Image 1 (cartoon, one colour):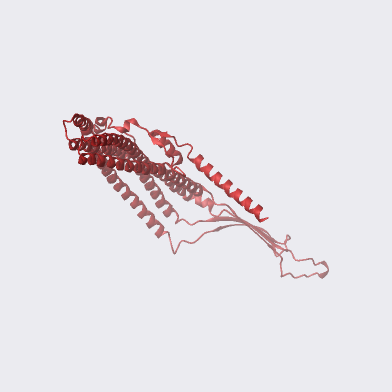
Image 2 (cartoon, helix red, strand yellow):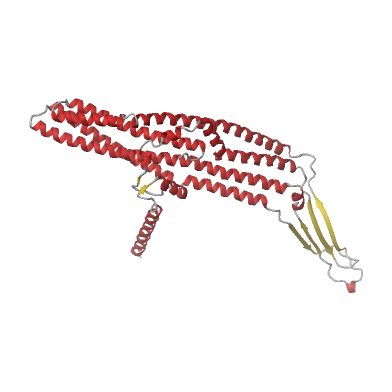
Length: 442
């Protein structure tokens, strides 16, 4: 019996583990093996957890609109009970005492709520809050898209760094093999061989470091995309992001035009205006709440049905309302006014923040573009490569010292690493400016 239970338990655990692995595999099945920027953004919009959380906040605000638009349900009251006080004047004809019955219906102040405009104002407050939530979701998307684009560039940079480090390591390995053979033939001195060996080992170290950086960059992008489970070994491909691109086109846009675009497109500014509308409606609602909630009621009651009954059938109409003599919503009104002022000041601050964002992003773009242009247009990158190749050729012919080649190689490696960093910084600055404006520039 115990053996059977143990076997069943093992089978159940194995089944759950297989189901979990299958679910994890299916969750990552849509991750392309080679991902473009468009594919990365598409995957993010479908699976990005932060964006899904923002969308859930919009759903919550939409529910608030439904709540605000609801009408109060009418109230129904029914009471029945026997009468304990009954005097019989004719014992022969006495019957049981008639029961007391009362039925009442009240509108729970729904009519006055509509006439006073409270229902309309509550709906306006909720509608404005929903518009703000939708713009907040768009603003969250604006910030998250920048992060995805920036991290995508980091993965692309890391891939190129691995590729360059691998090429360098292979070239240094060949150089070391050649130097080792020359040392065996007594064509070079032992210190020269050791220098080549150090260069080879350093390039191996650089390759391992580049591979580690690539794994971290890929994990960061997978997190932003919402990849569940183990991060797959995907690669990214976007040739236009591997160089500076059309820099002059972006630099030609003036600061005034950039700021104008930002003020027209930024969703956080639109959300702030929606919150201002909501706070204005809240002031009107707070003031309108001083109108008492007058409830209209209709009641039918009886205790007996004849004209001699203790309480003959009676239909009554009534009104009930709190008397607003001790408190007249002063706190709610003051709070609504303060919230409205805060909303207005938040808009003023946001205007300043947007101008600052645009200015900083534009300055970063100009600086990063200058570095890339110097690398590409000024031929710094190509010059360092030619210097390495020329010195290498002279060294192989015996016309240059090994130290000259190692210096040229070190300069070439440093220049390439600097170029990769400059390109990444440039595109990050472009995406930062797009984030500051709230729309794409390319």
